[in-house]
Image (cartoon, rainbow over all chains, first blue to last red; front, side, top):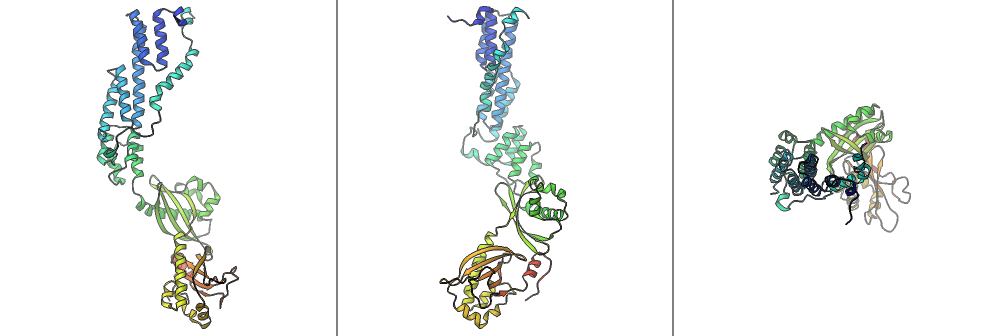
Length: 114
Length: 343
């Protein structure tokens, strides 16, 4: 089995969190969250893992909302709605995502697109 | 620095990863879609005022509303009051609506006033005063300013027509008279800028329509004279052209030899007024190309059957031909300066 060099010098939780950080930077939020979950399975009380998990969700949601706004401005209404849904998958209570989605739906209706 | 910190992932090593991540995540936002992903058909109908008001109420992005207006157009004719009905609209939305607002009537009112200010200021040698009405590309170049009006030379001007061109441009065809007696036919291109019209281009009027009309007028005149139909000939001549003198025997012999009327060339000349010099081949077997002068403003012949200086192969009973003695007076009358005597 090929092992990451981090595995040699870090604790298992640290390895998961380091991978989570890398994946976050790459925008692979699902996998990053998975690494955090793996870390929490190792230690369900790890504050660092919990904080990172919450941060990843916020970051992912924010990026999807930003993307949704850009698509909305370009009249890419359906892709913008998909981005809102993606944001809400990470952060179901995200008020910005909820409001933006509602606004896009209403604008589409006002324009006669649905 | 602790050992734990030493074991952490080096920042420099993650730098490229961060960049790659930003690129990956930004793809959805910057992907260059060329067309909105929307259904076609009835949904591409022009937008109504109520729809736009609703979009503003919903706080749809300014860019979105503007783009929809530009893509679908409007189902109503916007005017200045439309802006009042769209309180809360963003600048891009208002700009998009303004681009669809008919402006020709406004241009016909504003451009003549602007031209008067431009001529007055330039005649007084005060180009700074025309700043608000003229683009910097013109005001920054002496040659361009002089093409409009050199200082202390302006006498009078009038606007012939103002039309709208594609791209929200308005073309004014202008006749201007400079001292001592130099008429120019100019074309000014204006572009609306907020509440004013800004001069963006100056050129000479090619008098395209007038040239075509002049060719036909001269041909009809030649045919009428050849046939001795003086009443018809007088319809194509200025009121003071001495038609009666054309009835002289030596000219009657000359007219008898006319076998056709083929326009050879037309030149715009500026000799005490803008005139069209029309050269007509009246006999196909040899060089007989008498000249005619047509006033493009009236479309009437002011000089007939004469020989221009360089036209040495044309023989006429009298190379000076027939001339309206009131050409200058007619031109001055056009500019509202002095009127010619009634015939």
